[in-house]
Image (cartoon, rainbow, N blue to C red):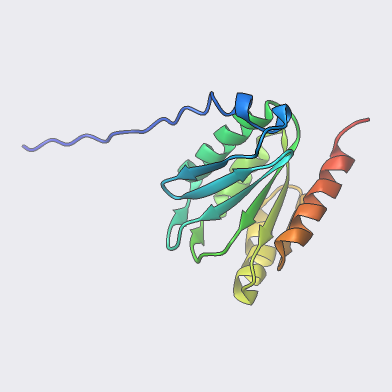
Length: 154
């Protein structure tokens, strides 16, 4: 009987915290096998590769990056959908368990993508007031920063 094994890649993001937002250095872009993530002061923007299925395991990678980079501070996630790909809506239930991920925005210039995100995907996120869909990235970044300022106690 032939055997096989599965190799599991565990990325190490331990170097990110020293090179990122809290130290006011240039914001890095992290290249992953399924897309890229650009890190900003209090949010990250993800661009997924064409044709992928964005599932719980890929979302786990993004949540690990967020936990390492933002180190318990409130942050937002912006999905900049420049490519066509599928999203498992269960990722929103998983994301809601991470207390410092406060805001999610989806950006797309495609009407169908925006409609699906605002009707189907939004229903899976626990706090619909902190999930919004946009046609322009600039509008999304302004909105997430506004929402984050409301979620941080003064």
